[in-house]
Amino acid sequence: MGRNNLNSDKYTNPVTRLLFGVVCCMLWGSAFPGIKLGYEWLVIDGAGSQILFAGLRFTMAGIFTFCYGLIVDAPTMKIRRQNLLPLIGQGIIQTAIAYIFFYVGVAHMTGAKSSIINSTGAFFSLLFAGLVLRTEKITSRKWLACILGFAGVVAINLGNGGMGGEFTLLGDGCIIISAISSGIGTVTSKGLASRESPVAVTAYQLFTGGVIMIVLGLALGGRVYGFELKSVLLLLYLAGLSTYAFIIWTKLLKFNPAGKISVYGFMTPIFGVFLSGLLLGENVMTVQNVMGLALVCAGVLIVNSDKSAAGLDRDEG
Image (cartoon, rainbow, N blue to C red; front, side, top):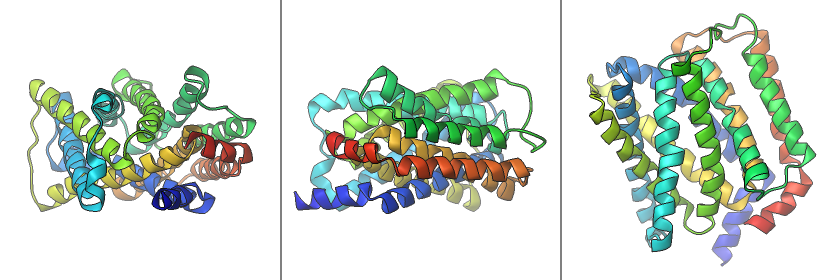
């Protein structure tokens, strides 16, 4: 009991919660240029190969997470029978559907722009939790934080920042579907994490979704070539960041309201934009990008100081 309270304090403390949220978003932001580099280094072409690449990454991430859980606290990795189907469903929603569309979308747009559009998942998460499930109250601070965060996303996408282009179904459309699925998955993940170990939830979710994507990718004729040291290390990095980020994110959701955590997702495009510029040479150093960063940070700080949400932490933990 004391150990659970210690974990709760660590993940509900405003400073450590913010730090964990930033680290998760930084890792996810680095995945955008990482995936683009993977497409090049592993000679990936076509939807089948893109989905297969995603499946390899998340199946590995699931295995890594299982290993971590068995080392840290093996008994908690045993899932109750009644939660097995919900966990499979979680893998379908938050991993398979989200990343099938995500990987196809990233292939048809810049890493910077895809990271920006994908960040709207935080907004869908808030709406789903507050308006559909009605598990959380959407306070005025949360609305203000999301408005500022979304304004930051819009600001980054304005002007001649090298991220323009017409709306396409394979690009923008797929990323939006991915964001919706991911946003819903964020909320449903909180419910599962309250009944099972966050590490176990993460492991089953990643592995189930990864296997589904491997099967689908192979069925569509997907192939992955070009395995050499740098491409293997990149694949291991992508799998490892998913393992760490999803474990921490699920623990944050276990001890905090989903709306309060999901708003951190607006930081992911900030890292995605600047890392895409650094690693892919995309044009991102513009005034509107700096404005976007300021707006996103303001939104995160506002929701992090929401006293009414702090009360919900104890009610929903």
